[in-house]
Image 1 (tube, rainbow, N blue to C red):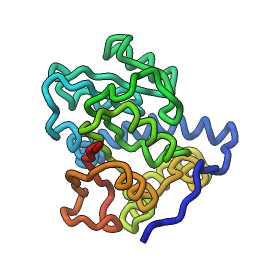
Image 2: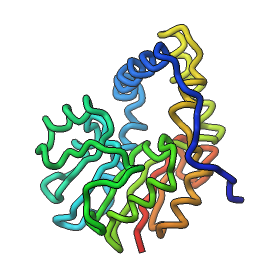
Image 3: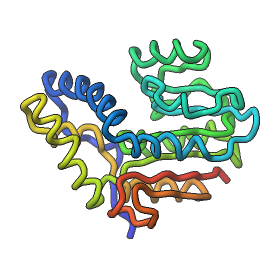
Length: 233
């Protein structure tokens, strides 16, 4: 059954103190993932990186952060571009890629690329955070070539396993570190559930393959993350 949703999402605003805590926590969590949760991080980046990429493909990674995905890709085999909203993150990305391959921007807005420009677009743990997801997907469709690949990794937000894992991992770590409630941070950050995102994707793209983690069975509520390869028809 399709989940009724309205966009753009309007999550609760965060105080300055909450914003500072969230920024500090993101850096802390990156360290935790790398050291304590390496298997899930391997899936997050390994799934899209192992999919077939046509030689010489022009690729765009949306929401590239500080470039954690870059080491997993064969950059010799493709013309790799990144799109990122944060000025600070763009500065880091420019130390890893040539400056003309780093674009500061929001995928919910029109970007400086011609229609049908990219052979492949990647979004790793991004779509659940986009407040006007239909608008963002329209822009992705505009700049992705017909027959081009859209490779996506998503958390299973709204599912039992993901919610339970959050209670055991991110929530106690945040509340112990900052002495404040974690739920407003989550509501402000993860604005879309997997059940809301999937229909938007399948309406616009052809699903070619998928893989769940940690269980091999394709049951969203029992898994933590899922990877998809779509194709623009």
